[in-house]
Length: 262
Image (cartoon, rainbow, N blue to C red; front, side, top):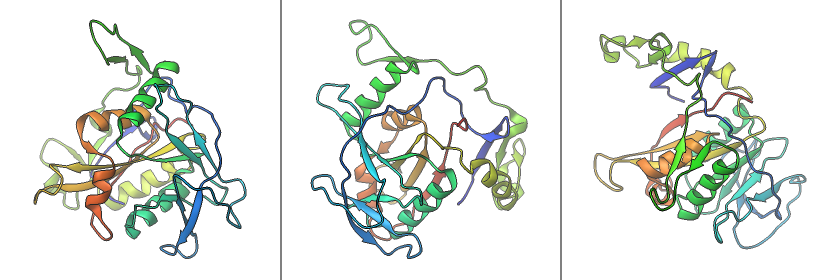
């Protein structure tokens, strides 16, 4: 886990947004197979069409968000007490699966959503945030498909709590605060422990640069903020194509973010 830049707010590495919360719903469990990438904590594969049960999966359910945007819907999987991680069948990268499993165990979210980058996903998350007050939908004639999002008053930058955590202090530049990666990990890990309890963890794959370009890099962000997810939809090449570009053994930059307010 690498932290290149961190901001500490009220003892959390966080960006606050008002009114964010998961929307409750229910749907059948859909589980198939298992992956031996992490033998002591099996990773289970979620299948979108067929329905299976499996020994040891009692209490594992899949939640479908109500169809709030036309026929659009997305699914969140309720995690079992041992935080075994359901993984879409098309994801084969063992390192990614193990990292997500480790972060789920650390952050302890109640639900998990592997983001596809689809329009349905974007529309449903926007409608959810309209319903819970995070977004205000603007006039459809003057500003079609537009929303207003106001920051929480506490969501401001503090230079003395923003750090560049490069291995060498000189790489941080003369105007930035620097902390060693080891020291920052020791500070942040206890703060992230249980930080997503009661909320959904979104797994957001994206490409920094055009997909397939020689200088592009794949990254995966874990966040409990739907606002961050829709922002990634708009500003990056995000979704299933990034997972496909990662392949079975591709390298990726791991990113961890939380609103930090259980």
